[in-house]
Image (cartoon, rainbow, N blue to C red; front, side, top):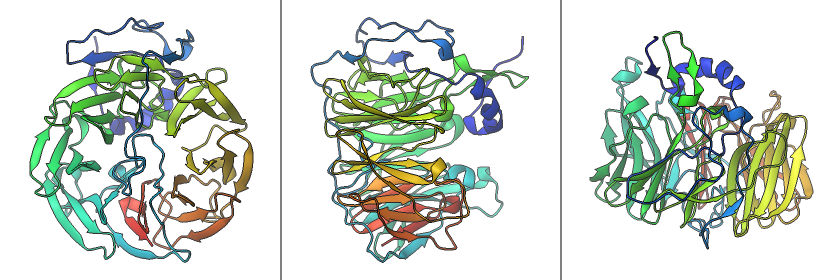
Length: 471
């Protein structure tokens, strides 16, 4: 019998492109869950038997809450940008930020010397006038195994850099809350979450569990959530994927000790569409792209989010704006966005955009939802209350490219889009008018993303992880 080995996602990117296409589908109902405490798991709702073909599983679980109150997200009104997506609601919105001036300019840049492979989807954070990110050192040979890494603090005004902690392994995914800096340290199967005192930079704890591809760290009360976006496919000696063995994971650690409280399965074969940002409140956590809401304290089921409309619809992401849950996904070649009441999970409206499944995470200013539509080079403005189309914006930035894969964020009165490579634009939320665009020669088009917004600073991630501070 062929020997089984486990490989990181990055080592089989080319294989996954072809292999996952045959197994991608609806894995929303998987309920593999490990609880480190002695708690009792409520009976499963329409559980998926082991070995089930996820693509063809259409036994719908019952939508609704098992708890009295699904809770409220954390950090939504925080003036900093403390974590990936700003807050645990995935709003990508900082209502306290002023944003760049009407005549934006690059205030400073920072080159982290990170190989492009590890620069994709890198996200800086901004807290109290300091930008936190990472950089590589000992890069002379160009070999990743020879590099060391540093977590650095950059003055938001001047761009002055200070090293605050070093490691002989990759540092990534910073989160800064309540006097503690959380980062992932390591790569492949040797990654752990480290917690440092923000003033002294002494390490308080590190986790024991191995993560392969950490994507997001966020704190909710006395729980630190972390996601592992690598599904860890089993691969035999013929390089054949075994998608039933793979799954991304959601971990819940104790904020004081780093001890594992519970872990739960995220998405299995459908990892191509998996982002890895959990929606979390003071009561529940939902792995991005899935429907199972888990109790924050023990990981047991707290409810099931509504399914997106459409035959074989695939869920991509969820975000919570006050009492409105916005869910995006696709069915066939149609992009979907739906709104639900967070307390009751009753549907409010749903919109479909045919001819392309492409669409990005939404964000909101007042009652206007901005949704990037890469394939037709637009950003669509929708009414948060009705789903009606209010406007379509067509930035002229990067005219030589066929699409416009923007990542959207918002202040209290403006939308900002960041393109791969660091090009940015601003939109008026009422009219959709393009207020300004900024792209320099250094902002070369590349598959890197990352953004943070606080005070008068917008930080965009460019080629090879270079940070552009836009003021």
